[in-house]
Image (cartoon, rainbow, N blue to C red; front, side, top):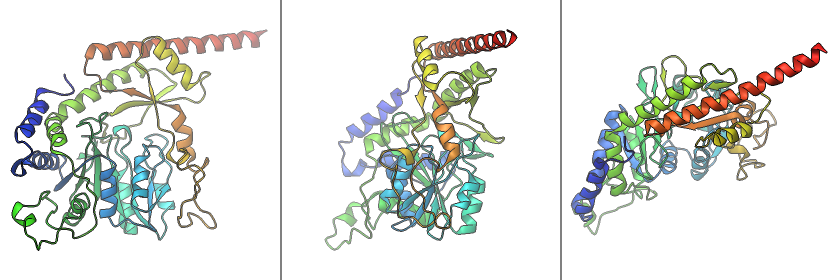
Length: 410
């Protein structure tokens, strides 16, 4: 299977053949948005230039602004929190579930203050958060849930495709994602008012665009008395060339996701009997889409994350990605005390160690194995290398235990 097929090339050529004339300047965008909404079971899909712009637009559409707080997880790419800052609001970090590594609903509820405006969970690595619990909490406190699904395409939560339940959901088409156009993204929602607000924000505030309308007609824009800008907005629209590639990828999405899930199954079989490598827990009724295959190294082993990765590469492995450094421990955040309301009596949330103990325990021990192998032979080779690496460290641990018992016997 090819990552980019002839279909994507065909659609790009159609755009180029149109010479970027006004009459054909958003045909691919319309097709992409219509099909995305259908495939993800929502009423509206609005394309964007990237998956950070999507979050920014969704937050602003939800009414998030200066003085507001948005509850976010620390274990994710920093764009989740950067988008909150772009909106002028304050990210408040809630801890994660120790097994699924998604946002912990109980921790979320403890952090809600009168200034909380939204909850921004992440479908980390391709696994849905506990969206039902989060939506219940949001309903009780009159909050919006904006789901960051950059890593989750065709994941499922109790029979519902991820991205169809939250008030708004954000997807990324960046080059490493399940489907890609190099860069790009999509916001989904079932709310027409929110969809219109997202569209206007990503289209310079144009008055004539709307939930399902991404382009101004020629007659409208040629009117000298036309009042173009109904509100402030950014130019976050997705170019037609990117839409063309994304459309081709979207039409092949089941195949692209299935290939990653196959890779995850292969790696899962390798670690099935390893007691010190634990895969991310997938609750009953959830379907993981495996942007990567993440596993957790047990804390009691006598070797480090770096030791394992070095041996894996020595045996011929492609390398292993780490989890992102927790957002609040990144230099741009660490030590900062954002202008947030008190999260507990006489206490503000200061970015530093101890803020989210579960995330701080989990993050340094995560291995992310790539799942974008379109060559089955290469995948099988990586699985063999992983098995060889596990065997090496299991043998080393057995030797250490035997040596310890021999010393005790003396």
